[in-house]
Length: 287
Image 1: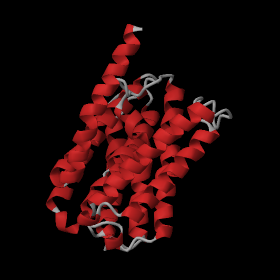
Image 2: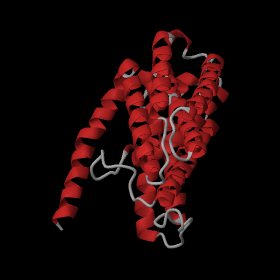
Image 3: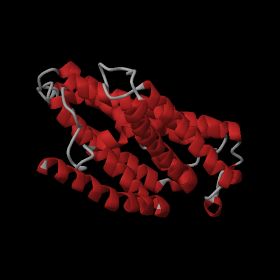
Image 4: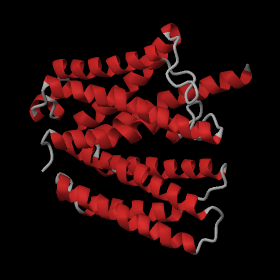
């Protein structure tokens, strides 16, 4: 009982401190927000490496950190080009290609067990964490509105899925991967995200920060946004659950006491961010 109470207290403390801090970081944006993104990536790489050690695999973390530093320097020194989607996409594509080659070459001299698996998981981590999630910097540079809307919509999806699934859920979706996820909860989460985005569109609370109307976002595009936030986010959740199920662990880490690890909290966003960035490009909001 004492352990449970301590867990609840830790979770409450994280919520009280974490939520206002995140909102402040989103509002300030700029370099502070970029540092937040890079910190999440660093912690995700560390947690993923710790998970892979359970299978006796060795992630080439040093190369991943070096690539991340290079991306951070590029994004800081080229702020005026962050709104050019062609330049950004070309840069990240080259980074991924060169990084993958360097990882493969370095594995020759690491003399670790399971070299093929080590290369595979390192390139995968490079793509999943470093390349894809760094697109969040580009979304933030576009608008505070879209950044906050994305985070709040994904949070509303998780919240609705949890409560409706717990109260009314019976039939499981993928019990072998995530035994607590139900169809009722999943559908409720999707609907919650769609309604949340539509609500923001109607009341337009971010008008002083360049709201939806400023960018010419339509109701149909808001619907697509809701589907991305409420649908793709759940796929990210399932994906991370599949990895943990394969490893045989409940949480990816313990850094967020009562909430698990960074991967547990940002698994949905690791999928949502690249899809949302592509959607914003499709809407013509980048050059």
